[in-house]
Length: 274
Image: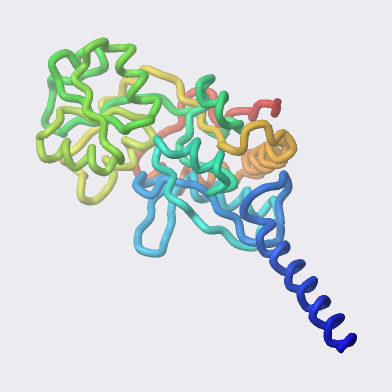
């Protein structure tokens, strides 16, 4: 009986160690790990973060995978990070980090920390190809404009055009559908995202990017507030990504087909973690 009790205790201890090893890669702690890691990305942004069946493609997806590999994770699990839910996903440990056109802002830094920036974009407008009435943000008076809840784009345009008729949807795909159906006159978000939509086969010849940016968006990797150690590791990975040439390869592969050219300041130098 004594031997039996010791054996049971040994098995229990071994099982506990095994569970700890399996769980170490997904939440909690500051370092990387050998297990799986959950990463937040966008599922509906062609060229940046797009889910098609079981496949995930885009510039942000490529960076997310690169960071995971550099940090020692053996596999990745992608979670949809809708704009309005990003801070919650991070703070509740549903994801370890987010790479999803996540603009670094002072308001967001009160809730999460950022590594980066890894890309600098600018806000623009997407309109129907035959629409000549919208030439920039200064021609939006009386127009119906669509953006996404929780995005900096919605906040920016309301500051630029007070009283604008803004329709806020949950995803950019819904905004694109509304634009094509004539329910709204324009979609506003970062030029990178708009270029991806305009280049899709279903939208070619139907939609166009105005090409007049009116903001500067610094994309960062969102992570747990105050986790400086992990932030430094992610920053090192981003720096290596840029210096190795992988950044340029990702841009050419994912945004090149849309005819998109990165603006001034690209590739950026990641800031120090604080």
